[in-house]
Length: 334
Image (cartoon, rainbow, N blue to C red; front, side, top):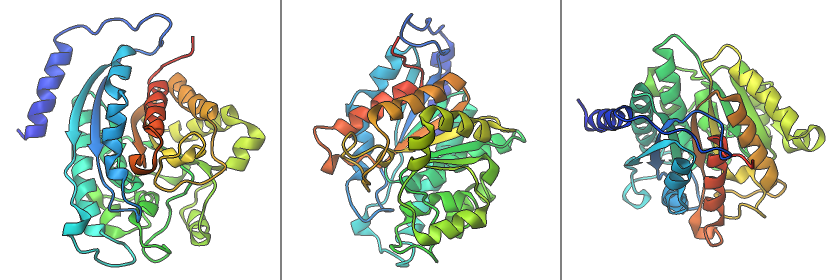
C-alpha cells in the first residue's frame, strides 16, 4: 500500500468510525461530505509568478474551519510536489515547462483517484490553471473505471483552449481545456492513458470574456456549443445560465467537476489573480453560481485556481475563494 493509500485509509477509518453530526440548522441543508484538500502549488504554466502561494493563502483564510463549521469532515492532504522553475530548463518555447507540468498533473491525478476511491470529495487548490489537466483526468479516470463519464463546468475569464501550435505565449495554463478535450499537447492530453477526458456536449464554459482568435477556431474544432460569455450573463442572468449549464454537464454523466478560476470574478472583488481581466462576475453573481451548484447536489469535485497573494490586497482574493468554496458546499444566507 502506498503512503497516500495508507493515509487515506486511516482517514476513512477515522471518519467512518464515528457518526458525523447533523448539519447545523440555518447554516446549510446538504448532507455532510468527507472532503480532502489537495494543494497543487504549480506556477510553471504562467509567465507571472506567485500563484504557487495560492494554496497556502486559501488555507490561511480558514478553508478547513469554514467547511467544518458547515458540518463536513475535512482532511488536508498537503501539497503535491512541484518543480522549481529556476532549477529546470524551460523546454520548448511553444509549451514552456511542459514536461514538469505533465509530471505534476500526473501526480495530482493519482491523488485525486485515490481520494475518490476512499469516498472523499477532492477540493484542489492551485496553482495556475494547468493543474486542471491533472485533477479532471483523475476524476474522469475514477468514473471511467465504473463505466461512467463526467461533465465539466469551466468557470473562467479565458477559454484555455490554446495548443502549442496556436498559443501566442507558450504558457501551458492557457492549454488545459484543450488537453482535456483531446486537442493537445499530447503528453498532457494522455494523462491516465486515454483521451479525451470529457465530451464537448458535457463541457460548459461560463463567464469567458478574453478569447484568442485561434481559440475561437479551436472552440469550433472541438464542437463545443455551451459557451456562456459575460454578455450572456448580462443579458440572461446568472440563474438561467447556471441552470442550463448544469443540465448540459449533468446529462448522462455521474456528475461534474467544477473548475473555478478566480479571474472569472471582476478585479474589483478579486484583485489577486494570475491574469486579471476587467468586466467579470460580481461578488453576488459568483456566490449565486456556487449556491446553485450546491442546490443541484451533483458536484463530484472542485478546484479553485490562480489565486496570487503577491498582487492581492490583504488576502482579499483568498478570503473570497474560501467564501465561494463554502457556498459550493452548501453555505446559505438563511
